[in-house]
Structures are given as structure tokens and as C-alpha cells.
Amino acid sequence: MPITKAAHKALRQNPKRKARNLKKKNKVKTLTKQVRKLALAKTQQEAQQLLPQAYKAIDKAAKTGVLKKGAADRKKSRLAKLIVKSATT
Image (cartoon, rainbow, N blue to C red):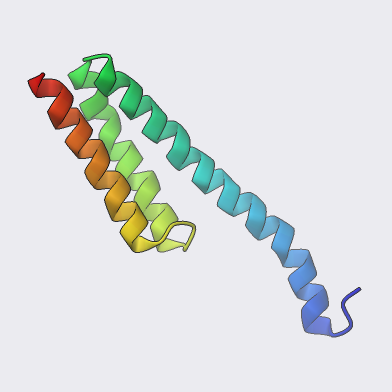
């Protein structure tokens, strides 16, 4: 059991923060999966339309510390590369 007031407050805050972080992380995962699925299914228009939403979710996750900046940049780069690559083949 926490002893100090600050530790009590941290105990209350942790579950809320965990839930918020998981929500952002899951949003990134689902949008990334959807974009990848559309790109691999050769539906470029739909993948291109969903890409800004994925970028937005990734950027928000990086801004709040759910993802590191480099990881977010890497995810965005790989999504864009996948769309371009599947368009040419």
C-alpha cells in the first residue's frame, strides 16, 4: 500500500493513464492493419484515403509518449512505402 499522498494519487492515476494509452495504441494498430490490408489487396484509392487518419493517430501517439518519435516516423514511412510499392506491382 502506498504511504505518501503522492503515491496514493499516482495509484489512482495509473489505471486511467493506462486505459488512455491502450486506446491510442489500439487505434494505431487497427488503422495500420486496415491500411496494410487495403494496400496488399491492391485497392490504392481506399488505402490512400485511410492513410491520413493513420498518420494522425500515429502522430498523436508519439506526441503523448505512447510511441517514441523514431518508432512513429518508421511506422509512417513503412506504410507510405507499402502503398507506393503495391501500386507499382
